[in-house]
Structures are given as C-alpha cells and as structure tokens.
Image (cartoon, rainbow, N blue to C red; front, top):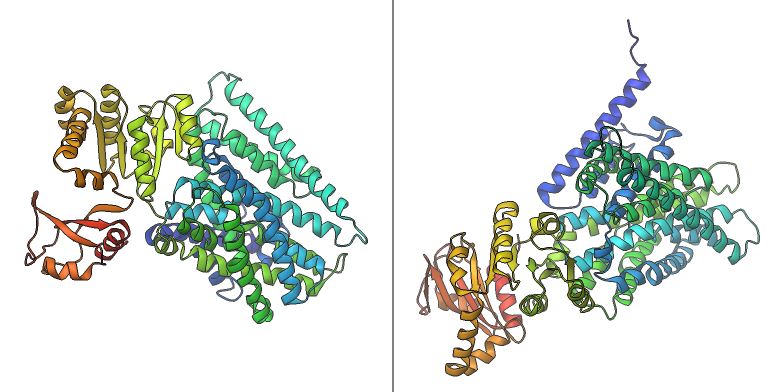
Length: 628
C-alpha cells in the first residue's frame, strides 16, 4: 500500500489548490466587472492571510517562498517582454526612452527624499525604497491594458516602462542593499555593481534566446517541431535564463528573462501565436499564486505604524512624482492632455517591489549584517502601503479614469496608407480615435510612422497580420487601397474571420459596387464621392467648406436613443438639454430620415444626428449616450 502524504504536505497541497482556485476566480471576476485582476488577487490574499482566515502564512512555504516567487516573477517578466514588439516600440520611442531614463531617475530621487524626510529613516533604507518603487511592471500594467483599450502609443509607453523599469528597480535595489554594509562605498562602486548585474543578465538572455532560436528554426528533429514542443521549450528556456543568470550574479535573472523575451518575441519564432497563448495561461497561474501569497504576508500593524507620514509618501509617489515624470517624458509627443493625465494616475506598483522588499525585510530583521529591524519594518511597510493603495485606487478605477479623461477610443483599422488612407487616418486621429494603418510598401510605411501614425508593414490580406494589428478588436475596418480585388478580400476576411461591427471599402471602379454590396459591405465609390464633392462646391459652397472641417471646428455625430428616460421627450426638450452650440439636425427611424419638428417625440431606438461645434457635439454624445 502506498503511504499517503503527511498532514503538513496535505495541508500545503490544499493551500496551493485554494490559491490557484482563488486566482482563477479573480480572473473571472475581473473579466466580468472589467477591472484589472490584480485588485481581486490582492483582496483574496488579504482574505486568506493572517488577518483574515489565516490559511496562508509565511510558515506554509518557509524558505521556499523566495525561490517560488523568483521563478514566478521570471515567467511573468518573460511573458510581458515577449509581447513587446519592435513595431509597438516605434509608436512612441522618445516617450518610452524618457520614461525609463529621466522618469526612472526622477522617481528614484524624489521617492528617496520623500522617505528620508517624512519617515526619518537612514539614507540607505530610503534609497532602497526609492529604488524598489521605480517599478510599475507588466504584472499590473498588462491586466489594466487588457480592460482599458487605450491608443497603441499609450500602451506601448506604459508597457515599455513597466518591463524595463522592473529590471532597473530589481538590480538597483540589490546593489544598494549589498552596499548598505559596505562602509565608505563610492558612487563608482554602486555604478560598477549595477552595470555588472545588468551586463550578466543581458548576456545570458542573449545566449539563451540565440540557442532557442537555433533549435526552433535550424534544428530538424525526426518528428519535427510541434506547437506543444515549441511552447514547452520556450518556457523552459525562460526558466533556464533566469536561474543561470541569478546563479552567476544575484538578481541578474530578471534582466536575463526580459532580454530573452524581447529578442524571442521579435525574431519570428515558429508557432509564435501558440507560444503567446500558452504563456498567457501559465502567467495567469503564477500571477495568481504570487500576488495572493505576498498579499497574505502584509502586516497591517506595520502599515498602521507608518501613520500620516506613510500616507504622505504615497501622495508624493503617486500624485506628485508620477504626473511630473509623465508630463516631462511625453513633452513634444502626440499624446493628448487626457492621455498624459491617464498615464499620470495609472502607475500602480507590482510584483518586483513586493517580492524583493519581502526578501530584504527578512534579511534586515535577522542578526546577520546588515541587521536593521527598524529599517526592515519601514521598508516592508512603505513598499506594501504604496502597492496596496496604488493597485486598489489606480488599478481598480483605471477604466473609470480612462473614461473620465476620454482616452478609450474607437479602434479603426485602415488597410492602405495612400492618400485616401492617410487623409482618413488624420481626421480620425484628430477626433481622438485609435487608428492603425496597414501598408505594404516599406517606404510609405516608414513615412507614415515618422509622421506619428501607428503602422504595421505588410500585406493587408494576411490574416495573421490583420490579427496582430488588432483586427479582432477593431470596431471598424476600412479597406482603402487602390485595388478593388484587395479591398474585396479584406472585406471578406473582416466579415468572416473577425466579425467586425462595421466594414467599409473604397471602390475604385463603379461597376464593382454591386459585388461589394452583395456582401453587405458599406461602399464608398471614388468616382461618385469626387462628383458629389464637386457638386457641393458648385451648389453649396458654404456647406462644402464646413464639411471639410468636420471633426475640427465643427462636427456631425450620430447617437442611438438607448436611454429609456429620453423616450417620449420632444426634440424641443432634447435641444434644451444639449450644450450650447449644437442641435438635433436629423432623426432616423425605421430607416427613414427626417428633419425633425420641435414637437416630434423620440422613441427608443431612434438615431439622432447631432450637428454643431466639435466640443459641443462630443459633450452632447456623452450626455445622450454615456459610456457603460
């Protein structure tokens, strides 16, 4: 008879099962309520921790917790960096570069000074906290971006900052901690130690990624590579990169997996889509485990002991330093004021500060050098207080903040970056929409990119390229090339593969209009549109001039009556509700359009066309059809 596991082992097994169950439940709740899963994970950890049900305590995992957290962090960082594509980095390269240099330096210096001043601790402990709180991290940014579909340039800047600053924070904190006990350490010693760890991590990451690339693309196995083997090999490669680098030099493993992830995500691995899907599932599991396990270790007495001084540090970090570094980093780029404010107030701290702070606090609390029990308490308390408050308020209300600052645009995919596609993209961008252009010609794509547009280079009829460009998330797909066959194929793919809400095609030859309309696709005939425009200039010059300014000084928008309280109101009542500078110009009911009389009563499902000044029209749309 096979002996059963001991009681301690059984309890640990049940606890691990409970953590994973809570993690999956948190993910489901996050999807249901459209908030980042991190919020539910932390609340779950607190609920099962010592101050809750006392199921998860530090004694459950003992000394193995550090290793488990380390490997989990490696997988999470690798998964985040694997998604950081070169095309995405091109969306806002200058802003991303400033966020990971100027922004990181400002965050480190400002946080260090705030901790030193408000908490009256040593410079060493203050600098250690300042280093750890540089990191935002993919563990908190990625879940936020999953439920807040901001423009690509905003997502690119936040993701780049999270991944790179995770590495910077981890290595810088280790260097400072190592030199805390070194009397008379010079700035050069700090810099040398930092560069050593970063260099080792980058080197190991490059070596492992090169080996994986050779194995997957050049080595032919008897049975051939399968998606399953490719997924498993990539996962093992990430763990090997982390453990090898960390064995050579402590805390260089994060840099290794970040490097490997960025390289492998951009070299065109076979089965790349399958690898990304598999890593995403694994990451949800380890993310659940790490956040719940670490949240369970939060000592609320330590947080309360910090008092108002601790809250003052949080205010400085989240409400002063963060907006300052974001506005400085995005100066001169095409970020709107709303996007800058959103980035300013959505910078929660994540796994790297939590895991490293826990490790250091344990070591500082032991008699071995550098022993500093009081410093350990301040370190753990401050870091966890910042994490807890920023995740709960910034992560939990991220979507509401995005709606408040109006940074959730309609995603439009334009196939063809010629004169028509470019003109359309400019108009949509000026209205604040998230536009991605697919252009096959390399020179044209580069020119569009230099002009600030989000561009994917390649064949617009390639399903995989359409998917990578966001075809499955686009509300509207526009086929605007000069070739009708290409436009027809794009329309078919959009209808059959992505189930896009609106598909619009440019028709260059009038005799092809019927073929497009048989598919149920909205068509714009190039010749008919040109004739219509000329006719307007002849017969209605004032209206024609105004129409060219749509989305700039004036605008026309359509909104459906979905608010029961509007049904039964007259046009006169609605016009009185609207902001000054716009009116209801048209009512569409049962596919019939009428210029409404003041006494016309609205019905549920009517479509109202609002005409007027751009700002007034946008305000009216929000008023009549607010975001969910």
